Length: 173
Image (cartoon, rainbow, N blue to C red; front, side, top):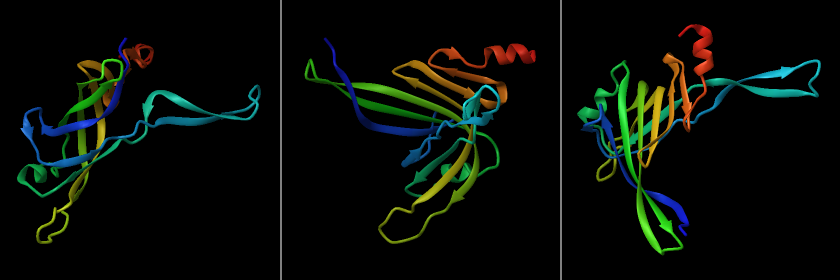
């Protein structure tokens, strides 16, 4: 009997357009926060914070770079950039006493909001950074598609469920 426990991220890389390695970084992925509205009135004992199906608030993502490079400066161009994050994860099977490697892939289409050039100090990382607004995100875990949100095309698929299918139909899309 397998008792696979996900432990940690082994390592990852950041690519532009799926093939250009951008540099050494750490990334704060966007939070998925549903748009909500407070519902109250006759028939409800109080208030309910009701999510809007398939709609999300801003999805900011931050990439912290070790140094400024030409590739990272190109991300300051005011247009949508397709970024791909490929990661290896470590799992431990306590029943077998063995480790295994999993994979994650995150693709975002993101527009720059802020470019921090960092600091210049001898013998230290520069701590530059890029902050983006994501209008598209797609995530695969071990090769299986788990999430796709495309705000401009009314797509919200979570764990195989197309949350906005009936909304697109109602809108004639």
